[in-house]
Image (cartoon, rainbow, N blue to C red; front, side, top):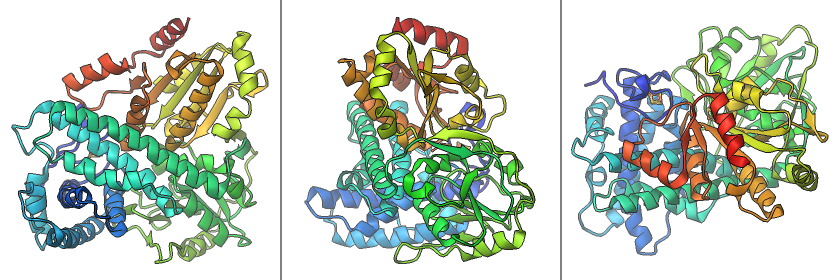
Length: 550
Ligand code: SF4
Ligand code: SF3
């Protein structure tokens, strides 16, 4: 022990089975094992909290926040710093003890009765029993559903964290974290119970995305069409990556009139569509492409980068002094911006560093793309869209959503988008779009053929759009001329997938590979119940989705 680990939570997992020596993502066995133990602690805490919930007691919000932050910390590409993990582990033990004192006597699972060791070395030894594969006798399908629920919850925690930071929460989700985690330790639950809990995770994923949509659109107003320059401008700059709009807003405020340009990166691109963010003149554009190109694109740049959520990759030495993390994101040796008691953050170290680095020397010729097709904007064109479909001008819609992986040669989604016939509309969301969103897809009836709905959490917007269109055609979402192609990489995409399934959406094309944590029987269940289709080739899948529709 010490050098081994087991993690299979993301799509790039080693050999499509599990990372056992080190993470393909850069996660060391030490971090992986501390994460296992942290999750074990959260499960233990949840057993006590469930008891309190059952007795009608209210949960301390600090415990909810702690649990949400801890779950988010263990999401792929978020935190690689062992000190943050040890700190969270110690905190978890305090919380556990306080809950234990309030709980009735009884039989609790090992995760609840375990007491954290004092040193990191001993914690690492203990972590063996927290491993996913530790109980060799556990039924493979139960293990599969326990993992699916846990990963769905991790995705939910990321969205929940973002919404809470803006001041929006949902009582249902706050409770669900504990109920679901308790279920993953409960040996009395049957396969049927676990399937129900998995679908419930999907319901809660819809609920959290709805809460986050409310948070974002209340604070920053509904997104509307906006052009974004994807080339650079002269001058000092800070690049903001990740999903957290409030971090971006605070940084925009603190950099006003300082001669610093702010660029979005990756999943922050949709920020340009929000009126209350795009109003800042120094939010000048979007930098770089997909997250997996960051090491090359950040190499030696004369400015700073702020990582607000996933996806962080090992920073090269050429920019380690100018990349900063905040919230739950962390990397050993990379400067972290903490949040103050009142929710504010002080970004002056980044600002000073950006000024010192001097920035880009020249303007590049601007190149613009469009963003901002959230539910409100897109549905403001509903009657044109419906008429165009009725007249046969628009034949089909393709929603190409989800995350992009790091593997080179992942051309399926780009090829697919390029092959979509001219009389069809492509909707995009999340970060899977970066390999094709700068291509020109032209227009159809005055509407751009490529409409970007937003971040991965805007799957909620896509659902709103689909439901409204279904209503307009007097049918249901599954009968619309719409095909959903979902690319999954990390656990937010698991939450998104479960959300769509819980809404009864059928016939989703899922790729680039199937999750390693889905057992053959569970896959069969998903195929039988939801007609989930593993992707094949763009040609085949395009043909079958258009055929299906006719
Ligand atoms: Fe492997 Fe993904 Fe886990 Fe990283 S997060 S260790 S790449 S399965
Ligand atoms: Fe992407 Fe990391 Fe999933 Fe919002 S930024 S999604 S992978």
